[in-house]
Length: 113
Length: 114
Image (tube, rainbow over all chains, first blue to last red; front, side, top):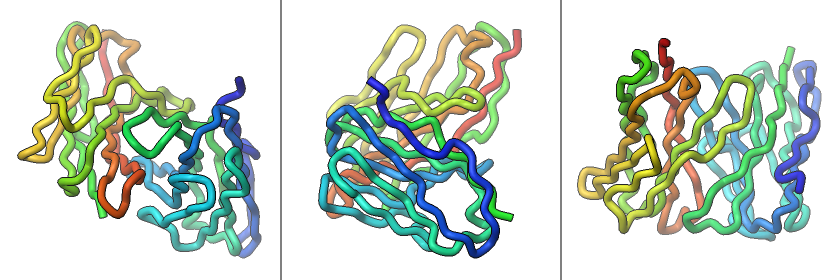
């Protein structure tokens, strides 16, 4: 099993460009999450999908959109990238939204210049 | 929404000493509290968790305690080793209308000196 797979691993964007970060899990998990990690700020929740067909905002949703394409895939879109969105992005999934372990992808390091 | 505060932000100990990291949460409906370890350049991985109906849980050198009344929980690492050096995150699983939302603390950089 691959677990949680994110693409790409690295990306450099110019201010104003758009891109989509892809996340797929092969563990038949119901819940999926997108976090960003910045030094000293921990893991901040951008959006989550408690189950297929639902999405909800997290702590820092501005400038982002998400799509729960199916049970396996949860994508994060930046419509007009800004330097403040330079960060490491992690996707995570877990079996249910009750007390279960979250499994993380390897992360995407995004730089906006 | 849920707010999780974690302290200290950095912690330096000598090998063999104990380390304690503390977190507080704001949502009294939160029901699940995991702890994650992230090594440099790696993804976070679960090391221990506790549910709201349990006060303490132990796994070898690692233990977690939960005080629901005070809304705080702590990670205890005994007999620390250099390989324990990493960033540790606490998290709280929201209840109520935000069911499923998993909010993390700011992280603690633990350094264990040989």
